[in-house]
Image: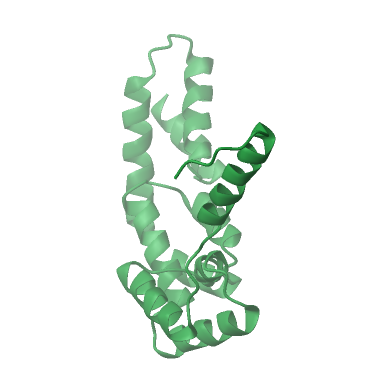
Length: 178
């Protein structure tokens, strides 16, 4: 549909209005629809409360509806922060090979309680933790081509510290390997 107007600014404003209406037309959800959508969201993968609340806010739900839905999800075991923290810690340690410090930092950013963080860290066996640190340090050391020993130590330390390994463990491992 083409409008013929003498004033081109009016034409631009009209297009802008249509564009704004089209872009701002978000779906409006009932509590039941939002609950079903969030059930699927939580069933697909463990989620923390912060992620669920953020999702509900992006769906433009009011605070009372958010509280109602979150309560329902907790009561029906779709949402469980202890399970989330354990799963998160196991996954980040086994797949990304993060250390405890990085895992704790990330869980704190997601507003997980101190108790749940401590419970999650117990999921990582100490012997496996130290073995992973050793394997990671050896692998990275082989990739560092610098001949200066101090630079090698610094690069290895930076790498391991960035991944969240404890400072005393990192320096013990560096002194053992170099």
